[in-house]
Length: 199
Image 1: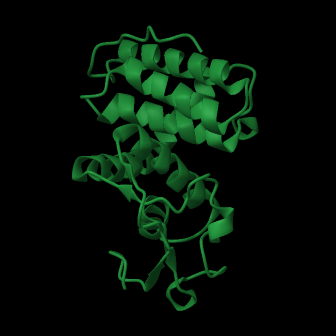
Image 2: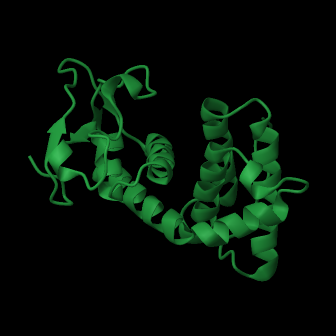
Image 3: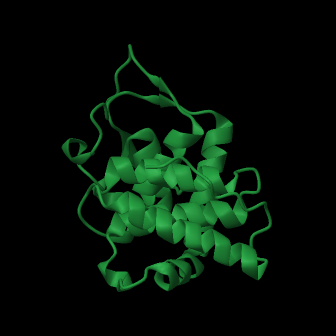
């Protein structure tokens, strides 16, 4: 079996009697996992995507770097990692697009984060918090069908699951200031409505 990147792959054994339906929220969460893995391991990003979305692992001979797997099955941070996800084409298309745009806009996103992270050095911001904010800012700039308030709310939901108790207020403040900054500069092409549910 080969990945779309042309590399030899093997599938992680999945349950046959249970599955979950993919959706945009889950796709966003998986993109966060891909971005986090991509920063840590020097592996082709297509492998990261297929590994996280479809639980596919790479053979030793196919990888340009070691170790032989991106993650071992027991290292996957999911309670039900062996439950297959049935993705709609629209959700995987959204995820591919989000991943690609987040990587392309990384420098711009980081500039906004650093500008609005008052009294914080950029390198001291938690790795996952940076990834969560990059996703939200990317959606603000490149996904006209997603309201700004939805991108911020979804970022806060990711922070609740993956980050610390204090991250919500920190991320909320930076994203709110970023949205206003982008709107004031004319970079934001959709209505600014940052009123969102309290965390």
